[in-house]
Image (cartoon, rainbow, N blue to C red):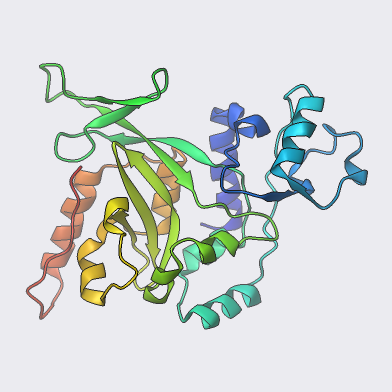
Length: 274
């Protein structure tokens, strides 16, 4: 997506979910410091006297002083193309253009979002219940053929202002030489780690419980990876509710494309059923 398209995607999501703007709803568990530039200067009269970076405890104290009404602002990334070129050289990878645009776009404090997927018995057959904070089975009723929506939780890897690459570098660093950048964690009964595969631009998943070894071969890694989305833009739109994700259809298209292209291998594309 272009920068303007990214902005429209974010603002559309935040307009539908205004509660996500409140700092008290941001998941700071994995974040130590954030820039004061996320704060709306109108909300904090003494904004100028704040340090450039605030600890999460300082943010919590400020929010208490402001009666829990502090919001975060959508601010532009500090990254440049040269920064990404240096990161690519250091890691020996080539970041797809879509993800480069994303990293140089904005740095939202999205944290964990709830995304709607098409439900099916073979794929996503559980849905998140916001009241009980648990997952309910979609097919307890007799109408198995009725269209169903599975709500899943996705926790984004933080992309923070002036620290845009820090968390990408620190999460699953042993997989970086394989061109896998961790985008976050998807939870729907089981837990999947979602990666951008820089080798082809696809979004793939690996089950959390399978990432238990530091010593892994290319063949083992390929067997653990499961195709999820064709590209990053599609993934982001689905996570932010701009598109409805249908895992079954995506896998069917993936298999059909594999059958139609010339190849010399007897291997088949990995698909995933949950």
